[in-house]
Image 1 (spheres, rainbow, N blue to C red):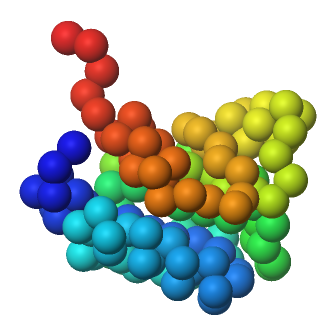
Image 2 (cartoon, rainbow, N blue to C red):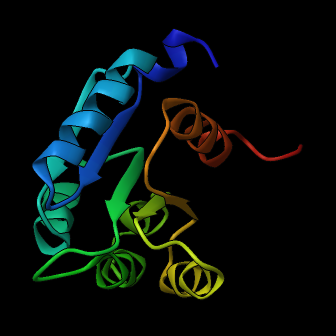
Length: 134
């Protein structure tokens, strides 16, 4: 994807670790993404999503008071179809098959293990936001 694709995107980053938020913001900015919002947990993330919207959400699994799984369930149950359809990329430090199943069942579109690499973020964004086969 080219820079014009990325420059039009709005990304919501939800993580309670400020350092991880900054790292993700740096990765996203290097792709050309200029519109980045952040929240420290799932409940604030849902409020931010409803208020500002997003094309894609990058959400941590382990947060308090509302963790990533609870956040995914809240998004997928929202009354607003636009919110319900927003792609969610879950990130976690402890990625295994069971966690992947739980994340997908909760409503995540994909899951990515930390440490996160810039190329992986770009690949996942491209995959989640690319139109399907005609």
